[in-house]
Image 1 (cartoon, helix red, strand yellow):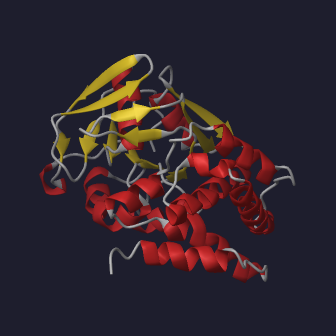
Image 2: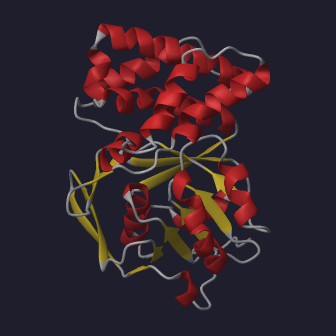
Length: 299
């Protein structure tokens, strides 16, 4: 594993999150190798301050990377795209390459590690909302921020992103923060079932349902070792109510576009871990099959 403050970097999956990280690196003079499914000459990130253009091209053929091993890979594909991204990991990783997983969920290490033997797999919590716009640019609504576990591999990511628009925080109790983010992701799944955006959380009935669901998720998170207080469900609901009414979520965007849904890592995990601990999850037992069915497509 490299300890260099200037590691060679690749971003696999230049969607909303990947583009944000790529733009942060490019602004700091550390333009990464861009790898994805769609050929593009550049990436564009927009925020309230203007536009950042990241020069490409986006590479689309892992077989043509050649001697393409790098020190750090930001894996920014969704969990539903992991198998398709496996060829990129094979092409880009050598023993010791740090793979920083920019995905939802609390199972990032378990799902990615089998694809990169000999490489440290670093989970993360992504705290910023970024959305792909018509035309392919990405709109960043808030400051970019990542939380990583405080382990040696995190120093490579910290070095790569030092003095950039994407801040990096190291957490001794990473599991607690990861589960708190999972609670947010889980309740956001209700937007898929209603076809609505954040404005729906202003409804009193949706507020009651959200609170009950979040309390269910909280019980499972605590059984998994997360140190989260009774106040967390209300805090998360308050956050959703404070968002712009048109704020969406990645799983809603996937539903609207007819793409596979990350229902298992965002919602199914609560039911699965609940069963393992003998914790009833009656709301999950309704929400999860509906999300799974929504992800099946039309028909």
